[in-house]
Each structure stands twice: as C-alpha cells, then as structure tokens.
Image (cartoon, rainbow, N blue to C red; front, side, top):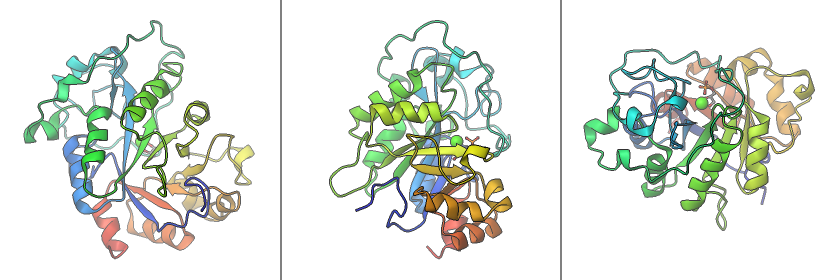
Length: 296
Ligand code: G3P
Ligand code: CA
C-alpha cells in the first residue's frame, strides 16, 4: 500500500474545513470545528502559534487584533491573557487567504520558553466559551480523538523561524501524548503538518518520519516548476491561484509522486476545476457547500 503522503493515495478527494467551518462560525473556535465535523468534513485545518508561556494555540494572524477584542502579538501574550479575550464576536474578514504572513518578527526567540504547564485555561468550556474562547491545540486534539468517526487534522506551523524549532518541538510532544504522531496499523496518519517553511517540515520529518508533511505554496519557485519539491516534503499545497493560472501543474506534482491539497477553494467553479484535475484535497472555508457540490 502507498504511504499516506505519496501519490496515488488510493483515497477519495477530501474536504478539509479551513479554520473550522469558518464561513459560518468564528474561525479557529471549538464551535467552528464542531460545526465542520457536524457537516461531515473529512479533515480540519488549523494554524498554530506559541504563546509567551509556551502553549500552542490555534490563531492565524501573528497578532490577535483581527479575531478578538484584544491587541498584541500572540507570542508576547500568555495563555491566561488570551483566555480573557473574546474570539467569537468579531466582525472581521478572513485575512486574504492567498497572502499569508511573512515572518514579521525576529528570526529567533530572545528567551527560551519554559516548559508549558497543562493547558488549564480551557478546561471548563461551556457552549458560549466554545464560540468565543481561544482554542488550544490540546483541546482540538481532544475533540479529534473523542469524535466517533475518523476526522483528520492538518496543522499548519506559523512563525516557524521565530522560535527556532520550538513550535515543531511542542507540536510533536503534544502529538506523541495523544498517540497521533504516526500512522497506526492499516490506517494512514490522522494528522499531517503543513507549512510554507520547508525548514519547518524538514524538522518534523526528521523527528517524526511517520507524519505526512504538506508544503504550502503561494507561488511556484523556479526550482519546483517540474513538480519536484524539497526533501522531507510529501504533499504539495498549492494555492487555488496557482492551480487556476497553471492547471497542468497538478499533473506535474502527481507525476513527481506528490498528492495535491489545494487552498482556499470556496468558489464552485474552483471546486469543479479541482475535481476535474483530480486533486487529493480541497481546503475550504465552506465545507458544507463543497460537500454538497460533491454530492455528499
Ligand atoms: O491551508 C493552507 C492555508 O491555510 C494557508 O494560508 O494564510 O490561510 O494560513 P493561510
Ligand atoms: Ca492555515
């Protein structure tokens, strides 16, 4: 049987809920992920960042200004600070899904992080909290393992250079604790790690060879034009803009042995194109609509 991050996968096209069912429920909240599972999404996508006290939280932007009632960089706030904010009542827009953050902060952390204590801040979630409280990755992993059907999780490492390996280290620690750092007998790994940084993915591949990796691309660099990607990378993650401009690239990636996961696919015409090209996963803010377009 083929490995989970080589093409062909032998699996049907996946619908991946980008930041949860983020069209309907505030992104990256527990409620957004519950909704995506309820809709029938095959997988969930989340971005992770480290707080100042060493917790991995699911937040897209480098700072909390767009998605909460607070201000400041995630990396300079502690989990308790984030837990006091409201991530549920913002009326903002998705950040442009095709212009992800550059690493805006300095290349390395000035002070090493202390070992993170248990993520107690979200221990007592009620329904309202699920729509508004910052979500730790630990809580999201609990949701995934507690769900009574298989739901996969695509975790994107953000600011991987800022903390010089600590995002990946913490991530792998946590995955190991849940037994989610490898494939289990007869099934592909339930978790995969995505990044725009090939260095981040290489770190993951070295430390956890059983975890599929997804190399996100917002443009195609000349050295990847033939479909071959950096060492340590299994799955290709081109933007929809790349696929629209160059549909033949999907076949080249496939020929090079890379499954193709496209983001962010919200327009029905784009969904149709992805299906026609035989991509392996559609990452969307609208899992309900995409599932229904696929007749599911
Ligand atoms: O799923 C990949 C996609 O999420 C990458 O862009 O900026 O939405 O994290 P961004
Ligand atoms: Ca993302």
